[in-house]
Image 1 (cartoon, rainbow, N blue to C red):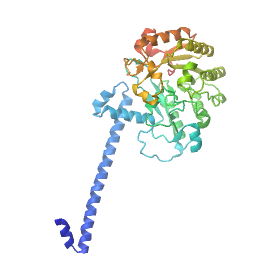
Image 2: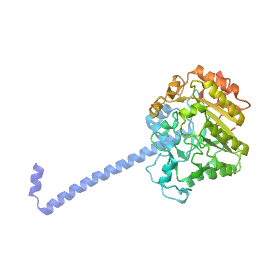
Image 3: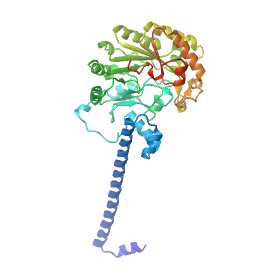
Image 4: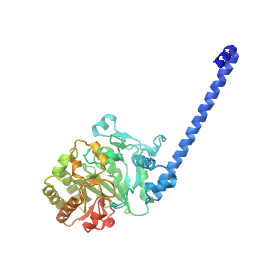
Length: 405
């Protein structure tokens, strides 16, 4: 009140000066606040980059060890890794439009909706190294090509519901020229013969005729003899592949299941019989073919259903068959609450914390299928060391869907 009475006594010029001084003070405080926020963001970004680089250089360390070293919560590190995987790492920084970032294809929004995805630019690297296998679980490490995030098939058991939980719609990345340049750099700079997996975060072939993936990728790998490219699909979209000459540097893998299981839990994907027919066609043309039966689900009558599937696989004679049983993190149930699929997995005692089919039943399933596969290399997907020993399999030295050989 005293201050207001003093202002009333001021002349207009004096009052204007007083108001100007107050505005200047407010602007100074706002400027200082902006500077502090900017400095904080820079410091946080620098720490994040430092932590992510350290993790890449030391893949064997646990999150707890990294957290203790840098004084950062495990949840923050986990979020940074997830954003890096999904291509949203540093997405707030708008990159400049450069020639090497221009898309090699273009689809309007109506066509995108029809095909079941949205187009957007990726702001982080397209290639990263998969090394998340926990102790006690056998799974090879490999490089992931994130040309897209998400899949239109929406199978009840799909792990992508959790991996990409912040992205409800499948996304295809449009700045493909930069992606292909990154692949060229990877082919040149990666010292050991390696697999680039194009089917970990999306179906490799489902949109191939629209986004020209195989037409641009296959020639890059065919031109060298060191690294291999892996396509993994539940589709039958091979029309673009059959236009290309086969090369030993490219592996085409089909994820399949017993027809009765697929009809119930993979409703949007191509029928298993059609996938096997596509695999057979490509093999006849000279392509390297692998098959993956995953997840095996012990529905009533599973023995006969999977026996029939094994007979069909023996007729195709792929170079490798990888077996995997139903497994999921408990929160996956929230994404398919009406499905009964989660009732088959009641064991959560394994090292990775996933729910799994009880050990003895899994062992029985694997023994039955393995005994019926003929002259085919066999591997297990993300199974325990205990299971490998029970089946007398070579563990980390196994051949499976994602290994080089």
